[in-house]
Amino acid sequence: MPKFAANLTMLFTELPFMQRFEAAAKAGFKAVEYLFPYAYEKKELAAALRDNGLAQVLHNLPAGNWDAGERGIGCHPDRVGEFREGVARAIDYATALGCPQVNCLLGKLPEGVTHADARKVVVDNLRFASKELLGAGIRLLIEPINTFDIPGFYLNRTDQALALIDEVGSPNLRVQYDIYHAQRMEGELGNTLARNIARIGHIQLADNPGRGEPGTGEINYPWLFKHIDSLGYAGWIGCEYKPRGTTLDGLGWRTALTQ
Image (cartoon, rainbow, N blue to C red; front, top):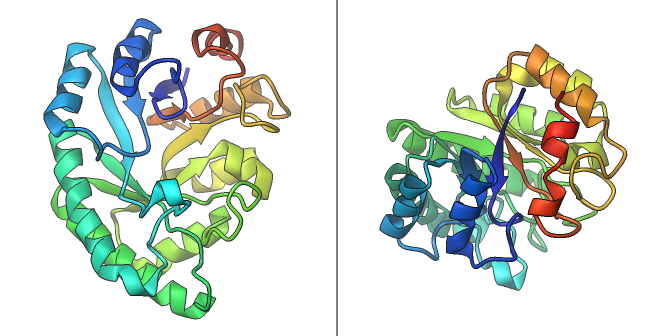
């Protein structure tokens, strides 16, 4: 059976953030992920992990002004310095939290910037970040995001992510494969996973439409979970969905869909 990590940005939102660690552990999760740790003290987060017997498996690089609608700055030519500072900050937190990988949200293509110019910036930024993170023993991920939820996002498809990885040429760079985003942009989930599993560093899930729990939409999760197991994927699957009710009320899928 796949190993599931609770995404604390999306799950247990009935509780203040720092209380979600305990709630996840009591619900049977052994690992957590979330978007950003930077609003909290490293010692506070590390204690929450330790006290609840949880592993931290993922967080993102700093992604600009999230509350103002920014979704990453990796493709912004005028913010390379800020991006590099964010890499250092991510290493600081990931090291303190024992987090083995971080995700880079590349952001929305800025107005007036061509795709060619943005790609050069992206490749340079990823080469820098992957080298710095490799030195710290932390893996770097890039994630394709669907354009329905985030219009204008720079990276949208698995093949685009793989082409970027090839161009960057770093052994430390992998795809973060979000099943929900992939279903909306390209489908072909089973074949895409089978073809590229060695280049996928992390998987996330939600159903479609609505980004709800597995079993609430069109994706055949019982088949997909068995397929992922058959491919030998040993990593975590992050539960990055929007519960229809309370988080606890919606967790029955873990048993119903994995037998």
